[in-house]
Length: 180
Length: 425
Ligand code: HEM
Ligand code: FES
Image (tube, rainbow over all chains, first blue to last red):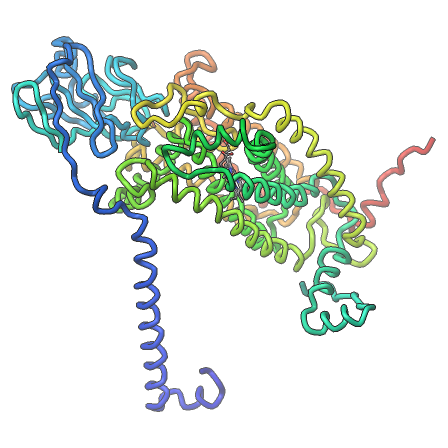
């Protein structure tokens, strides 16, 4: 475009029209490229069959006090722990200002079911599965980079930023829950 | 490759006919044979050739492995075992590929540290250096995705942890994580796409290598004294002088390589990777391959919140530790290229090397291990992280200002000739 002759007549209406046409063509072209690129990227996203928010039901009557199971929900492991009274007391005795991600133990369980702790079993650092009943706080210890969680699954030490996540769940009966 | 005209004169009429239409032979002759190369290059300069050789090895063995490998979460593990046990010669081909990745990284580290010592990143070689850093990043991505393919426990958890790094990005982190994995967790879709990309990336690397060599041939090689070539007496033709030197180095390099492939194919591996991937159990000691350990140690060292949370901060340091290499040409303010003539730089450089090896060691240890008195790996590794970054951000910029370099030789020829002749007996 920038030949000498049209530089000299920069402000003639003709040049403006041409620039407009160039820009409009390029813009339409860019929209076209983006339109083709999107399905090529989007195919990588989980499809509807994966997304269908499957919920699982679980009968907890076999989990004895002081033990835990790991179940699978949406391909992700979930801890269900039947806590001892000692664990509950320990969790509730911790002052809020000692917590990296302050949250009351009461808010991490369902009222009246204070012994049942249900949490997504993935370390909030980079997603390894922490090992139960270990670490300095009697809760969970992540083998990957050493994050430690207390008996409420709250982060106490190490690189993880957040408490273990409590998934959406509800009690169907006293010993049966539905996750999701 | 502007600095040297082709001297190729086709003698056969067919060769001439082709050359008039596609001057590929002339191009090859001027870049691979006549290319004027400084005559004082030492063995640290052979690692470029070694790297090209290793890329070839990985591509050839990889294509062959792909003929027997099955990228399916239920079958992948067994298919790799079948390669090792049943496929004719498969045990060796697989060993060459997996130990080859380690040899490849060993060579690239030497190559990078060579550049850092001799100031090979300084003008006019900045783009050459940047292309090198891009190759290094692509190599890391390739090796990571290759490591996932055997679908053992370490494969699976490496994939889980590394993809999770992207979840640290605020707001769009989680959608990106799902996009990368193709689901809520690492699973069959993840394995499939990693295989596709693991096959693709080495060819992208090959393309960037072409640019890298192009960018090398414009200014020509740097050399151990860092003084530019002044005239023809400073150079020798690439062939036969450096083709032979590189070949000799490749042969020597292949001795340990062959030892690993024949006698210790699993020495770099981890026993847990002989257990098939299990999304419900994380192995008790997760460690990456040795070549990622320094960066893994940096990621792990950031275990405290500071303005932003520890996860994002760790990821920023982790990414920053590699991306900072892009800026080295502008961070190093010294006019003198070669470390040989920089008395203070030398000390900081070798401390940087030791620090890098220390980080590598920290990366393999448990964070709670006590190293000095009550101080644990988690504590002392923070010091190493500080030095790692200080080297680039504080030391290199300041040294250029305050250091008094030793006098430089006038030319390559002068420096070569001034060396005392070896005693002839
Ligand atoms: C930049 C070059 C490459 C690097 C650094 C690299 C690295 C790796 C690594 C570390 C593994 C895991 C080995 C193990 O633990 O057993 C692997 C596996 C594999 N790679 Fe590559 N690779 C490269 C090029 C290629 C190419 C070009 C192909 C061709 C398609 C390929 C195909 C495979 C296959 C099929 C596997 C799975 C079998 C196995 O585990 O040995 N690779 N690669
Ligand atoms: S994934 Fe748990 S500490 Fe990093």
